[in-house]
Length: 282
Length: 313
Image 1 (cartoon, one colour):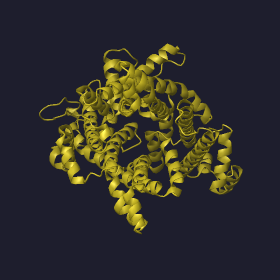
Image 2 (tube, chains in turn blue, orange):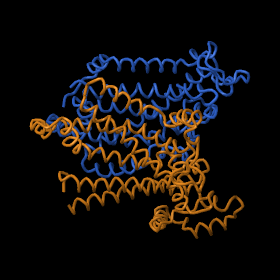
Image 3 (tube, chains in turn red, orange):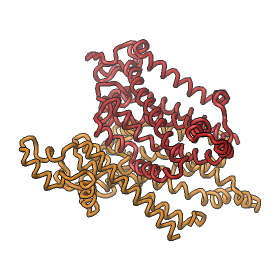
Image 4 (cartoon, one colour):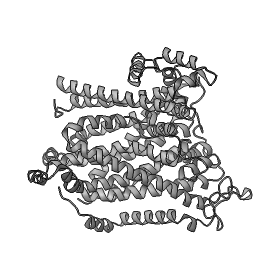
């Protein structure tokens, strides 16, 4: 197993044009989200009855929705919610998933019990488990994140466990063990750094899945409250006007697709670097 | 062989048991005190105590879990609060559209995913490969509800080829119901084909590097025979697994698509139950859906053992 160090990996990643474009797209979306009040140009909740369902124009770049709210402003503000939920979900599930996977993969005796729980949790369809959890916890930003973290943690745990099983058998682990290094230090200093790359891949993929899942939850009306603009609530609120004003559904959807796609291209780029078997021009 | 079966079976039972505990704990945590729900706010303390005793709710939680599990094992999933019928019956009534939808969607996903994945693997690195890989990633980035709305606008509203919503009248002919499922099945099939393309490609790449493929080539067999007969047959086992699990996950996992298309399936049953806080339905549905997944997973494991002699016996 070759360990690719992070700076070199980043450099190699940026050599591939498509990966670089994705990274740029994500950067732009992130900047727009963080500086939403600056870039939005209008209040996302300003209603204007006379401006209902107006097509894209110079004044309303992406048109207006059924209450005359500016679609562009809502998408930019929606990015804040959608991206924060997804980012927190990715961080949370990778944190807990790595912990569980590391322990299960490294300590033989804990492997079976932990992984059976993981198996059990993964036998619920993602979106269904998320719906049930949000129903139980109550719909709020924190609870949507918590529910999605619970849904994706087992997935990360499985991946990290598999990689840990490989790393723990490597010679240098045996060597540091023979040197009498404490187990906690072995895990932290020697095993974990070797798992960094698969973990990074998981971060980007779960980020993408969480964007889609949050949109799905909000669409079903069990996620974020409808008055908060997320990309999911926007589609849910306006879908009945899709036949008269295609832009109310088209643009939030494109925002979701563009973000999820860029994240996956980025994750895929990282994976390609790591797994020579999957390399494009082998 | 027998030992393999026994271990797998035991493992499956353990997972099922954990699923049952999770479902019980989750829904119990949510519904709070079922007695006050049952009796309403007019009930006196004495009434509550009596009913609690009657239903065993004064016992510790593990004992209550035992009671519940005994009922479940006898096929009694409880009574829906809103639908005025047993949960098991409500689930059965919703089973047909969901099962058909899931089978049709997996068929479409396989029809798209297998050929694209095979071509991608054989022409690895070519522009076709990059195109298919890109399309697969795009497919995995499209929200199903959005895709559904777009297809409804195009093929149902504008062109009128399919019904906009629903599953036909209750007495509709089988063909009519299949017709109503075409559009939702296309949505799920196309979106899920992304996973199948990726998986087929990876699985074929693994196999194409094997010695027996080189042997077949050096025997002078045509590339078509090598790819379709020697490689694909061996690559197919993991692909079939993924197809099976995809179908299983769509029971309940197709909830968003079922909602968009107004299908009276299992998924929309759960969403309505969630919106109305109908906990017996949530509880029963989660248990059955996860149970089906575990059982299908187990059957695939068994098939592996039968089909592939390399699986440790």
